[in-house]
Image 1 (cartoon, rainbow, N blue to C red):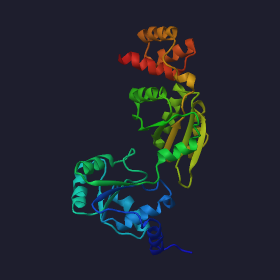
Image 2: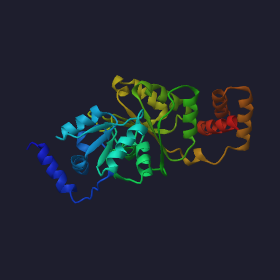
Image 3: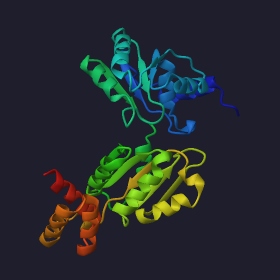
Image 4: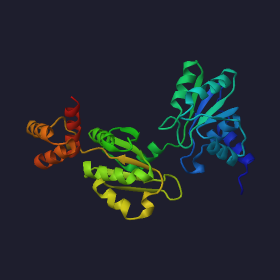
Length: 301
């Protein structure tokens, strides 16, 4: 049976119609991260009821609405105009309209625009309601199998290159719990090489093209990640979510042994940070990520 827009809208109304959708409210709407079928019936019903849709890219959201057989006024609201465009949204809300906000994919304000809009709407005493759905962060965590983790930290994209990137990665390696990163295809090779260097024994779950046709999920040691990437040209294509598994308890123990710290301090006096950490790890056998984190703290003290 072909599902026509009218049948789809009726199914969405049957499932979500009893929900209260107050007027004059902003609805923060999660959209699929790659598979249109992941859009909830509640989201479809909400889109059929709003007076306008603010969105990161009107072309992307326009295509989504077209698939659903809907036609709504669109308001461009992205990282370059979020504060100014928020005023147009607030004006609509103040007049009693319902407005949805959608980023290009996933949940708004999670490494996407939306947070400043929500803050502005709340500051005007207006209502904000979430319409939950897909999130690449939670999707990746659910298949990582990091049973030892106690919570997680989402970092999004690291600085793109240079010492700033190395320092940021070194600092997060010393944190407990799972660490979730995003990376673009043209930088994934460099990131995996850096992870293999700084934390070769840490487990890593690589999620490529989540929910899309060529979705791929692979868990391995960070030391083996560069070889996995190089084994097939397809491995480097598409957007990546990486889950760096929690470090073993021994690797995140409080502080370094006094002798190890003394060695590190002496080496830092004579060598660049990267070389000092590598040599200290070889001499002491201490985890490289713990040494790197401590070296950063000593350098910045």
